[in-house]
Structures are given as structure tokens and as C-alpha cells.
Length: 119
Length: 114
Image (cartoon, rainbow over all chains, first blue to last red; front, side):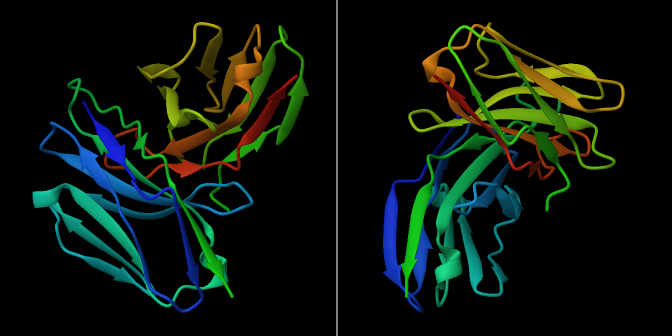
């Protein structure tokens, strides 16, 4: 069955430290999509990145980078030189293609990792 | 701002009551999703609509129902409310409802059942 595991429930770092949030997924589909969302204290869910299963290239966006490794079913997220504004809950999510022959796209979320960045 | 709107932002009601949550998708998006976020269950998919038709169902209780109207806004109806229904309810939208599309989330409706 499909599943997303974020083993780190809470992480606390001091500003300017680098931090990596882990995400491990399970799926039987060969085509799937992985996402990261950020939920700041205000509560909304903010989209960060999408990656498809055929693209294992790592991605960097400013202080954010993502490492996708199919061999270990992981899609980890690193924040470099963390800032207080990075404090939030981060969710990793999975959607699968073609499970029912249609194109439903519901997301399967991990439990989230709460990141606290202290000044 | 994702472009997805949800009303109301907060809702306090009593057990046994019925409430309706409303969602307007981003302009041009045909698919709407509803999710429930609770402390014990995390973020769970409830139901998906595409252009007015139900496309997929997740862990949605029989006491809950939803619909998508011709103008593409959606409503989630929760009836016979129980204490355990207290949660943050999110609506998300995407262009065509396919798995590869990014879903953009609204600000959520925080429901408290007393």
C-alpha cells in the first residue's frame, strides 16, 4: 500500500545551521509524483516542489535543495543556513498515476516534521 | 496567496449539528479536493471532484457529503457532528485533477465541535 513516512517528528536548530528533513515513501506504481509542502504557524499549506518518478535530478532553489533517490525511496529536503522564518511544519506527499486507470490525483501525506529555528 | 478561497475561516458548533464549508478554486482549475487535518490522523484526503463530477473518494464518513457546482465552487457538508470531527478542513484545486499536477491549498476552515 502507498505510504509516506517522515520519521522526524520535531527538529530544533539554531539559525544559520543546515537541516535535512527526511521523507521515505512506499508505492507499487512505477509512475508517481512527490511533493513538499510547508505549513507555517498561520496554518495554510504552501507548495514548495514537485518531482516525478522519472526525474532523479536534484534540485536547488535558493537555500532549499531536494535529494531524490529511487534506490532508497527517499525524497529528502535540506534547508541551508536556516532562518527563523523557516519555522514551520513540513509535509512530504505522494500521488500515484494510473492506479485505477483514471487520473485521480489525491495526495498521500506524511505526518509532517515540525522545524523550529531559534535565533 | 494561492488563489483558493475558503469560507468561513472558523466555525464553532455543537454536537449533532450540520455545517457547510465552502471553497472556490483558483481561476481556471476544474478539480477540487477536500482534506481533513486532525492531530491524531494527520492530513487525510476526503473527496475529489472534477468539473462537477465526483472523481475519487478517500476516508470520507457517510455523515459527510460534498458537491461541486456549475461555477466550480464546492461545498463540503458535515452532519450529525461529533467531537472528533473537530479539525482543519482544507480545500485544494488543480487544473485537471491529474496526479502530476500541483494542488494549491486554501487557507482552511477550522471547525470546533463542542
